[in-house]
Amino acid sequence: MTKSSKDRPDIDVAILGSGVAGTALAAVLARNGAKVLIFDAGSHPKFAIGESTIPYTSMLMRLVSERYDVPDLKMMTTFHNAQANISPNGGIKKNFGFLYHREGEPQNPAECHEFPIPKVTHTENHFFRQDLDAWLLTVAMKYGAKVRQEARIVDVESDDHGVTIVSDTKEQWRARFVVDASGFRSPIATKYGLREEPSRLRHHSRSIFTHMVGVTPYDDTVPKGIHGIADTWHEGTLHHVFKGGWLWVIAFDNHARATNPLVSIGLQLDPRIHPKPKGMTADEEFRSFIDRFPSVRKQFVNARPVREWISTGRLQYSPKSTVGNRYCLTSHAAGFIDPLFSRGMSNTFEIINALSWRLLEALQEDDFSVERFEYVQRLEQGQLDFNDNLVANAYTSFGDYQLWDAWCRVWALGQILATMEINRAYAKLLNSQDKSVLAPLEKIAPDGALPDYAPLREMYEQVSLTVRDVAEGRRDSGAAADRIRGLIQAADFIPPFGLDDPDCRFYEGTPKVALRSLRWAKSDAPDYIGKLVHEGLTLFIRHRFDRAEYNLAEELRYALAARPLLGRRLRVPAPM
Image (tube, rainbow, N blue to C red; front, side):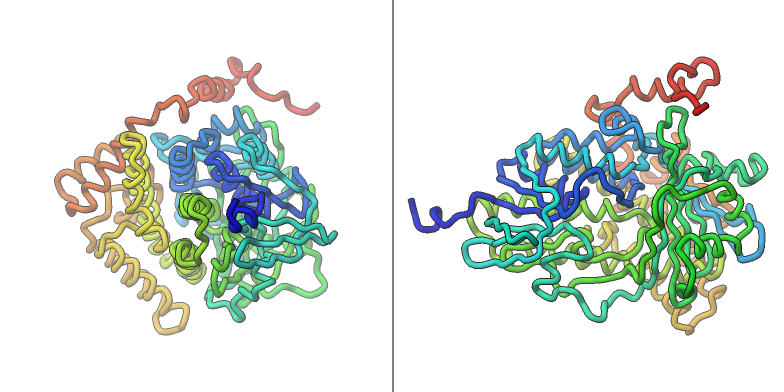
């Protein structure tokens, strides 16, 4: 036995934190032969937020599942599979919904946007996180990962041969590498002074959040059909938007077979516009704030929290670096922006995808040089910067509906094209089992997964600078909105989803729209974007009904459950 192998720790990778980031990474590593030990200061089940998925996230989960041979992860990618295999306590997500509000006025039905999830990409989830996180922990254990719950790690010390991990009870472990996925109070960030002070991030927000019962569906508070939307607001992730912030409403009780009466509620506020009041409880502040918006208030007349409110200070923090000698910070241990646009899980699985193969190779070659993980750091920092820009500009646009209307169209364009990029990469992986087809994704991931198409990126940059001019007082918001609309109208690379139509506020990916987009891609689109849209739509459609992703029995049960008489046996009885 060589000296190096004699000194080698028994644990290959220690992971701090057993949320989605830590457990999904542990499952991937353990499935591929690594000896993994997960630590958590608490124990499951436990309260967590970050419940809403988007098509890009679910496609990334599919990709990680296929690339690393962890089929369980595909159970997370559709509502019906999640309900059947993970927990029946989640909600359905059929759309992104945005309602614009002004203080003291009823909501104007003309000032709203809805982005229905195209059915071709399956239906998204409102995860009940305490169930999802506990399930993912069992998946990691199934593949061989070991777990130490209620083990609070207080010190981490790396050397040439490994990492020493120390708990608050002085118990010690040795590992070859450590991944910190624990959150804001990251032991590694604390140990090595990795937090930026002050943070470079320009966005500012604080949060008040909890789970509630008795929340009235917004659709029941307004005349039927007043907004003319495709799906009800309650069936999606609803964002109430106003100057200086927004309120999420993420329902778990929003489908015919619902078992969970809870609704996740979170109020995000820019403290420079809405400072935290003194002498108020979080519940009092929440009630006082929504009283300013009569249409929002109606949803909460009978609502009450089922757990203590959590009220934060500024949410944003950022790292000086995320990799070092035998360690890596990931997910919320590295940094955080804001839950707007539901990008948290996307960022988590981007890091899992990029880190896992590099770490598996490092274990095999016994080479943990920082340079090997430099891309992972660039990805983590790039994601933070991109999301900071995205959300900071969105908050600026909340001050004027016309600017918000223009900005959210640009955000939607980026989401559509990024999803098409990952659609085609995943389909090519399924068809060829050649992992090299994923290399283009790594090139664009640090930039928010925007396609590497110069005119698109230039438009994003011009729009961002325009909104930043508003934030810094150099430009009027109305003039900024007009300029952004002009950039959208002048672009020849925007698929015909209605984003360039000022009168269109509902962007549906129906079969009719898909066919129109395919014709556009073949005849009118620039070559790069035309190929992207065509492949992004067609390659994945061929796998839409793969058994690993399509649960026909569950889809039928949910369809029947919505029928008043036929579905009675499939629904949970109402409480007496």
